[in-house]
Amino acid sequence: MRRADRLYRITEYLRGRRLTTAAWLASRLGVSVRTVYRDVADLSASGVPVVGEAGVGYALARRMDLPPLMFTRDELEALALGLRFTQAAADAPMRSAAERAQAKIRAAVPRDLAERMRETPAFVTRRDPAVSARLAELLAAVDGRRVLRLDYADAKGAVTRRNVWPLAALCSALAWTVVAWCELRAAFRAFRLDRIRSLTPLARSYPVQPGRTLQDYFNRMHDEYGLAPTDFDPER
Image (cartoon, rainbow, N blue to C red; front, side, top):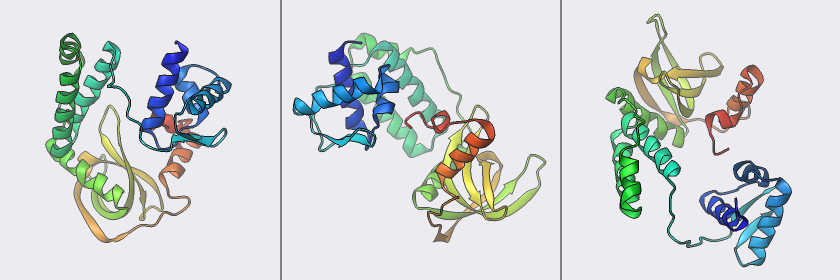
């Protein structure tokens, strides 16, 4: 990668994230952390408003208006697949947002790339609309740290009622699940959305409590199964 292209990509990453470490940038750019330090220093010297420091992370001090982005064929295929997944698996408002984003992207790129995006030969089957609608309820509860009461059926159909602290929604090849701290079991649990018989937000919220956070769940997955946070969230 040319150095000019690398500096541009660093600026793009900083523009789209709240805090970015040199190690994260180095992993995405295929260079050493020392190279990232030099590049960030050069960007700062050239007038790009980078704040932060080595070992902590970097961010832009204010919004920067960059030239319109141009996507490669591979990038457009990745966007097409992500948008198709959202249109198949998410609730109605998010599907609508994906459709609008798709239209904006197609209008902004050359016609041949817009056609390539439309003809990307990778597809996602539509999931149960009831599950998609429940996903929106769960995401709202995560955002508000709202305790949920679930009537939940296990693989044999036995139903239990429990109060949970929803932390995140995950999607595997099998199904959407909600990761939560379960008050009944006093432990982390993952609940498949298609097995939730009923879902009721309670009046109370849950606190941010050490040992019961999403990061604690990631730590548990790493200790027990060797999974890293990046296995769930590539942005980490």
